[in-house]
Every structure is written in structure tokens, then in C-alpha cells.
Length: 66
Image (cartoon, rainbow, N blue to C red):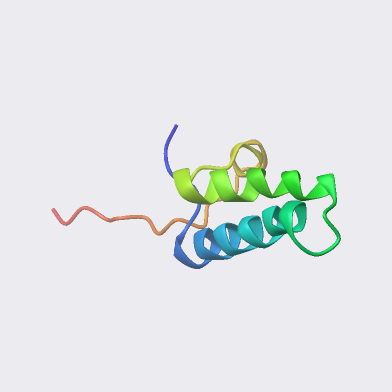
């Protein structure tokens, strides 16, 4: 399980996850806010199973200099 979520994508996922989770406690207080756990967790661990399935990778590749 290698990283496939890059910097900006990672920050966006964490922010979106926190905003969605806030819907559980404030605002409309809807249980749909628990969906925010998915982007929050994928942002925190820098790995997304959907990206793996679709072959996406937003994580910068470190190149080896020979």
C-alpha cells in the first residue's frame, strides 16, 4: 500500500472531511456528515483505494539520481 494522494489533494480531503463531520454536530445535524470520515482518513493516511482501482496517483514521484 504505497502513497497515492499528493499534497494539495491531501489537504483538500482533510478539510472536506472535517467540514462534513461538522455537519453531524452543528448546522443541520445530519447523519450524512459521517461520510466525512472517508476523505478525512484517506487524507491522513495519503492512500485512496479508489485511486488505486482507477490507476490515479497525485503523489509526486521521487526520482532516483544515478
